[in-house]
Amino acid sequence: MSHQFITRQIHIAVDLMREYGMQRFVMDILPWLFNRSYSFYKQPIQNESLDTLCRVPFSLRLVQKSDLDNIVSLRPRFYCLSSLRERLENGHLGFLACFEKKPIHIRWGFVHSFQIPYLNRTLTLESHDIYIDEAYTTPAYRRMGVYSHAGYLMRQILRQLDYRRLVCAFPSWDIPGQKVAARNGLKKIGEGGYRSFFGHRSFFWNGKIQERSNGNIFLETKEPI
Image (tube, rainbow, N blue to C red; front, side, top):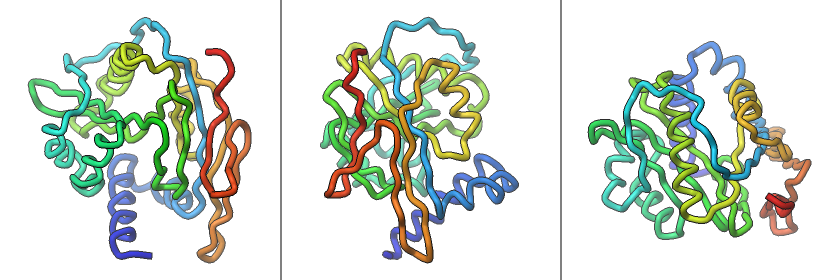
């Protein structure tokens, strides 16, 4: 296990502790870091009405190469410039929210095929599907409706780009997030992850998630949208 990997894991753990608090981190998140289980959801990208109030009049746009330095500054322990450049070169999409020219929220959409680093598995998607991950709002702008409104604006952009379905995953401890997803019409399609025993990882998948012999996984989402 490389020093860089261990350092990144520590930074992720510190980031989670700051965001959710010490008690929740110790009771729910810390055990999950060693036995990771995710619930996968999907939703057709349709015309939707805006049913949440946002107290911050921000704009949302696709990430450009010129934005990358600002994005790294949002989460310096989490992002590095080279990996973000690689994402854009591979066709993945970043969605950057700015208020008065100040970046306040970032989320990423992954397409085609990509590695899920926290599971060490490559996920293959259908051509019109997009996997949404790493949604992050700076602490000063949380609980103001930024997350939900950014999701609404993101769907508008995705429809213009002819994406038809979004896919996302929630860690097993994030029950509130899964309840919000279900309330907003996302449908659970399965679970997956690994259990760790003395350094050995035992992977499991169920529902519409399958693992190929090479260790890559894919989601069955071909039914009509």
